[in-house]
Amino acid sequence: MSAMSLWTRFQEYFLRYEDSGFSLDISRMGFSEDFLPSMQSRAKQALLSMEELERGNIANQDENRMVGHYWLRDPGLAPTAELRMGIANALDTVLKFSADVHLGTVRGVTGKKFTDVLSIGIGGSALGPQLVSDALGNAQDPLSVHFLDNTDPDGFARVLAKLSGKLDATLVVVISKSGNTKEPHNGLLTVQHAFKQAGISPFNKHFVAVTEVDSTLDSIARAEGWLRRFPIHSWVGGRTSVMSAGGLVPMSLQGLDVASFLRGARTMDMRTRHSDLRKNAALLLALMWYYAREKRGKGDMVILPYKDRLLLLSRYLQQLIMESLGKERDLDGGLVHQGISVYGNKGSTDQHTYVQQLLDGVDNFFVTFIEVRQVASFQELEVEPGITSGDYLQGFLRGTRSALCEKGRDSLTISINQLNASSLGALIALYERAVGFYGSLTHINAYHQPGVEAGKRAAFHVLELQKKILTFLQTHSGLPMNAEKIAQNIGGDAEETFHILQHLAANRSANISHSLGQQPSEDHFSWKCPSTLEKRTQE
Picture 1 (cartoon, helix red, strand yellow):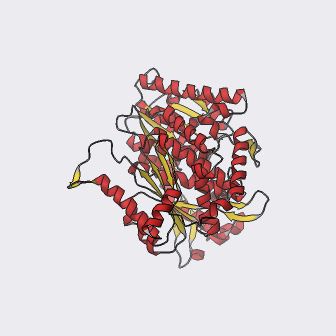
Picture 2 (picture 1 turned 90 degrees about the horizontal axis):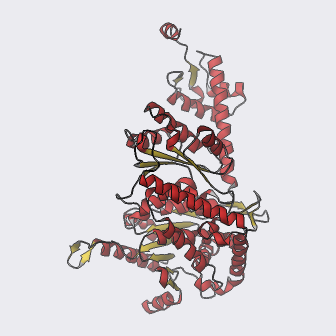
Picture 3 (picture 1 turned 180 degrees about the horizontal axis):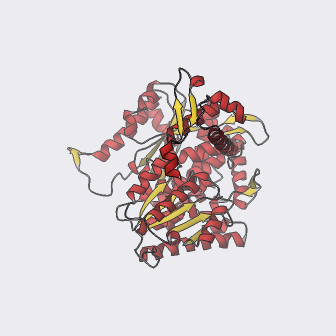
């Protein structure tokens, strides 16, 4: 395209919400002029589906549940007075509790004012709060927030080391909707053990639960007399829970602007209910995904936020988009293998990592640039006469966009005036609604995650097999055997058994010996017989 035709196309496909400082530019996506008109019927159906969802129709057929995360920032949309009151009461309780913590009205068992928050969660219960904390947090925040977001013991140790000597001033927030998820449960047990070792007793006055009413975690918190219990509603999924108590408890404890966060999301929701697809940013975004994925076969979405504070946005969107849209079958049971892969880091770091491939490598992607127009809230240093570091940041963004366009590579650009609680809430709401629209466009259920559950079941199978292996080795103490023989005796798979044995030998070396062979079938494992000295010690 010539420079003039690009300018004309930009004006044709540039959407701006002036009062919100938000804009969406889809002009560098390679769709033809007839694409949007050809999608009018599908777009209309997507809007109708979203209206039905917001009215409370059963959207998650697998679990016979409503999908109501949009109500969290606008309780008036909820279909019953009971739901509206429950949302409002939960928000009030969260804000009141955080205010009491900040004032020192609520303190730990030793009487110290809380200085730190340790948030324990996995998936959406971690990614959302982490994104918000990193994007909006400052050194002046009343409490510092730390996260346990896995079941890695080394990760536990690293975070707890940062809280060494401060546990008596640390408030622990455990976030788990069902209360049965193993990662946060393991984190909880580890942290409670750390409190016991530090001599902080009773430690229950340092713990807060965010979970569904009457869940396993709720029962634990109630039985142990935890400080507070906040509800996660059954109609809120983990990846869309950042505006529930799951996201707002750590956010408000950190001292961030919850009201503006919710208001920004609510405003974006209102904007993206517009029936004219050319004025609906979330619908346009979903249509661009549809064009890239369905029309061009480009299944990779590269997120490039030119802002350090938005580093975690790509990780957050990985879960929101990939867990929502990665589906084997459509709503009619047809095999579709739908999905979009999401990755990214930040600009201009990515100029020096994988932009080379984006420009010259395989063309299987589209790029989303995220621009924050105000690059600094202070007077910048000039690194060259008349040029600041922020000018370079803008130059790299626009330069990369132009270079991609010259190579015929698709990109779109989302811009916000400033990064603050309101604009971050708007960005999250934009993508939540785009995911919902895309699910309708492709006729899939964007609100369940059967693959995740399958992975959990497989993990539990491995752990059950490990228990059998340990029992067998102990029963045959001192007798070296290979993985195949052990598997035959316990009714397991030889390769699975071999990997479990390697794990056990690496982590239970005091009990399990491992002799290497030329190949895996020649490796031998055994339960160590205690020496005479060990026996005497045990006696």
